[in-house]
Image 1 (cartoon, helix red, strand yellow):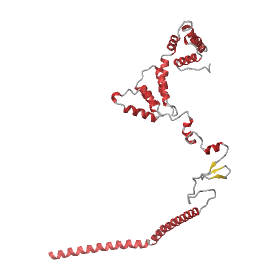
Image 2 (cartoon, helix red, strand yellow; image 1 turned 135 degrees about the horizontal axis):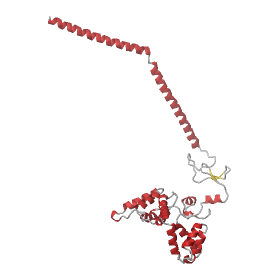
Image 3 (spheres, rainbow, N blue to C red; image 1 turned 60 degrees about the horizontal axis):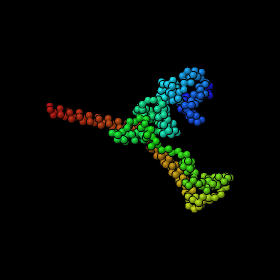
Image 4 (tube, one colour; image 1 turned 120 degrees about the horizontal axis):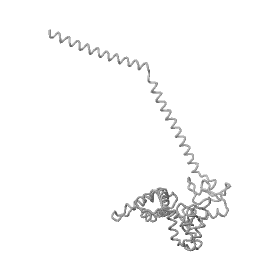
Length: 316
């Protein structure tokens, strides 16, 4: 049957089965057989097994439950629980304390011994709550080494409820957004009450109240003109306002003129410097420098020749 509930493990089926019996106030030992037939009637295979192993055996519910778990549990249930442990991840919006409880339930269903490895798996599953993970590790590291417990699932399950602070509260009066809307005493502000009574007042960009059609009804007491520091009202234009505007305009004009003058000065300096450069003059100066160097070299050579000739005559 497509709409029939499917259970991943026999343990989950047994838990739900017992809860249904309790809901209808049926004793387990007297009514488990009839109710179990109703649960298995859509499977011919399971009904056949039930008829051979459990029906008319006069078993208590505890004995029948043991046979059920032995038949449909074992390696299949163990593998499912282990896969579930490694795939569980706490979402960002999930309560980590409740997630740890679910993790412990799955660990008990796996019927394996708690260890440091499963503690590491749980810490990894809480990765979306990094601040809480840091607090858990810091608490463990601050414990005296001689009395430090094993960092397993049991230790984390003890510490997390103590370290985690749930900011959400079912009482909406304590909600941060609710406190922002209220005046701190659980009552609406007069302004909000007037809005709720049907008047459509809005704040304009200057902080004044209007009725939505552009007409201002009243002025806030603390709203003063920033120029003359007098109470502001619609249409207010003081002398200080125009003076400030004029000074601002004069300053803008002066800055613009200074920028133009600086640009002209830079351009004029470059032009004047370029006018002083004559290409022909540069070539002539270069040629004259070469001639001067050549003359100095010839003069020095003639001097050495004369001195050498004089020395020769003195020897002979």
